Image (cartoon, rainbow, N blue to C red):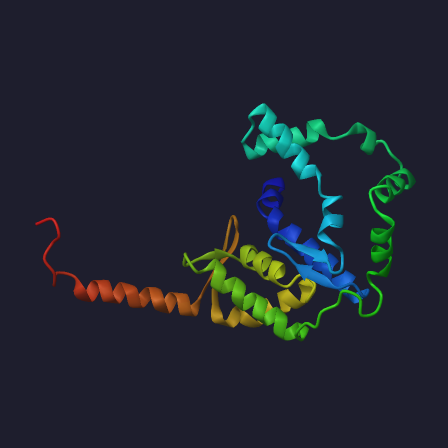
Length: 219
C-alpha cells in the first residue's frame, strides 16, 4: 500500500495544490501559475523569496560539502533544519515571520484577497478543465504511446491551478474516456487514445507494405 502511495505521490501533491488554489480563488485571491506550481497574485517576488530561502540554504551547504545527489540533499535538509524554528509556538512563528517583512510589504499582503486586487480574468471553468485535459494528453503521449492515468490527471491539474478544482478536472477527464483505451495494471490504470492507436497502426502498415522493396543498407 505504501509503495502505491509513494508511486503516486506527485498525483496527490497536484491534487492538493489544485484544491488549495481553487479554494483560495473562491475566497477572492488571484492565482498565478508558475513553472513549478502557483503563487498568490499581487505578492512581490522579493517578498516571496524571504520565505523561500530554505532551498538556497541547503544548496549552499551541499556545495560546501561537495554533495550533488538529490537524495543526499534531502537528508541534508532534514539534518540542518533549525531546531530553534521547530520549537517555536504558532504565535512565536507569526512574530518571526512578521519580522522578515517591511511595513510596505505588510500593507500589500493586507490588501491581497480584497475585491479586484491581483485578480486576472480567466476562461469558464468547464472550458478550462477540458482544455487542461487535452493539453495533458498531448504532452503525456507526445513521445510514447501509453501513459499512466494519474500521470495525465496530475499534468491536467498542474495546468489548471487556480482555474478549476480537482472535481472539474476529473469530470472533464471522464468525458474524454470514450476517446481512450484504458487497462488496469498492478501499477495503476494506463491509457492511450484512439488517435494514438490509429497512428501506430498506420506506421506498422507502412513498414509492412514496404518490406522487401528496398536493398539492405549493409549489403
